[in-house]
Length: 152
Image 1 (spheres, one colour):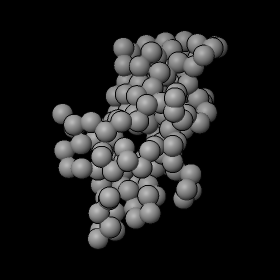
Image 2 (cartoon, helix red, strand yellow; image 1 turned 180 degrees about the vertical axis):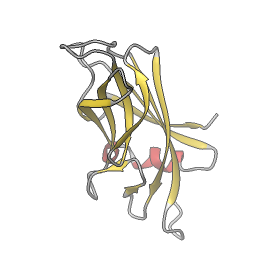
Image 3 (cartoon, one colour; image 1 turned 120 degrees about the vertical axis):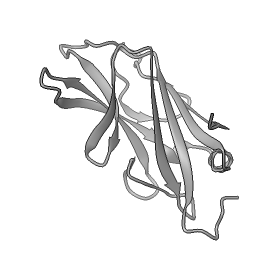
């Protein structure tokens, strides 16, 4: 069981995106994907990369709620955003769609195992949807696999 004597349990999260859709789709060019921290999209990865990996901190609160700078949504419906957009010539990012990795869909036993020091919670998902575009909307298993793994 997660340590209930503390206000929160730190949890390292690794998101591994595979099968990216490419740099062009439906009239959009120079497509990139990043993870959203607050209102800002950070750690951009080109849409034609072999894989995209993000590492970020999340806190697990007593009762199983999630918090942290990357956690979005209201209590009981928390998620992490992967945001898709174009990068202009001056480097500006313009978002056009997002995927929500639903944290409530993560099995409590997996969260508990990932919270053990030296472990990490890993989300693995294809970043191309069934129509060949950038994955969007709410993403839950089986479209994403949540596992606990050694941090290395």
